[in-house]
Each structure stands twice: as structure tokens, then as C-alpha cells.
Length: 91
Image 1 (cartoon, rainbow, N blue to C red):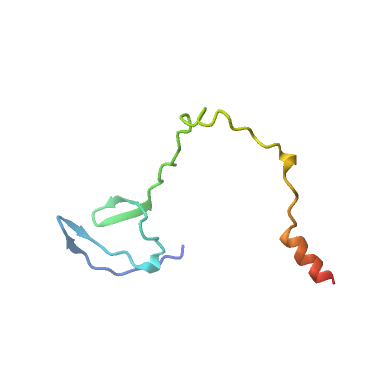
Image 2: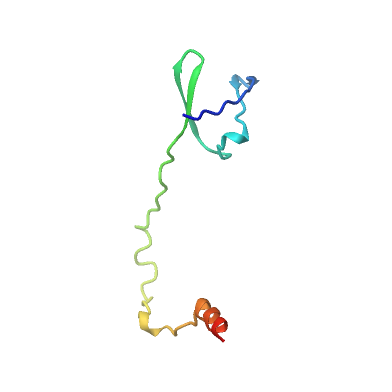
């Protein structure tokens, strides 16, 4: 296993003891982490799985009772950017 080692010094932050995590560890800013104590002075840091956000859409039903869906075939075909690029290339 290829382990990387980082050196740091703890410091007082409010009523806590803190340790800065070097940017080189690749932990994005704002990541919620959990520290697991494995032995005295031995910890494992792992990301916390954030709960998936859901939206309650039950209140949307009936908000536009007169609205009608437009059938799919009523839209004009738009020229594709890719088709335009290919046509210009083939000239």
C-alpha cells in the first residue's frame, strides 16, 4: 500500500484542539468528515455520506388547472449544431 505522510501541529481553536489538513490530501473545502478513534493517538478520517436532498412536489398539483401540455410533434425541428459543423467540414 502506497502511504503518504503529512506533518502537522495541533492548535487551540475555541474550546477544541484543531489540526489543519493539508490541501495535498485532496479533501475538498466544506467536506463533512467523521473521525474514528482507532487507538490512543491514532485516528481515521472518513467522509460523511450526506443525505440526499428531496423536494416535496405534492403541493404543485392543480396549480395551473388551465394549462395544457403541447404535443411533442408541434415543435419545429431545430438544426443541429453538430450537423452544421459536419456540413461545413464536408464542403
